[in-house]
Amino acid sequence: SASKAPNRTMHQSNVSNDELKTQRELRLSTFELDDKDTAPPHATWSAPGYLMLLEMASLGFGWTELPRWMVQRFGRDQLVELTVPGWPRHIRVDAVWSTRRSLGPAGAWLLENLTRGGAAPR
Image (cartoon, rainbow, N blue to C red; front, side, top):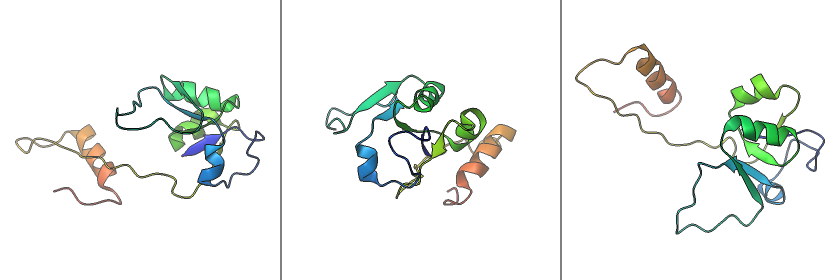
């Protein structure tokens, strides 16, 4: 989910994508732009991990996309979830495993949670 510190530049939790573009985006430094991609037209800062992004957003340095569970556990009353059209974003993930042996408990749990609400495995 998109999150930011309360009572900072964007005062309400309902914001548009255009409003987000006027604020600094905090993103994972593992995100690399393809040579063909252009840099975002808005200001961005990066951090090496989600906890650093959470801290930066808590201090009011910008908004960031964080796992909801992380905000609930570590963000407590420091962050608010933004309601933005098109968010939360859904990301396509492929799951590949060997059919020669059955999945263990962790693999079965992961597959079940990845396919819940999505397409059935092929």
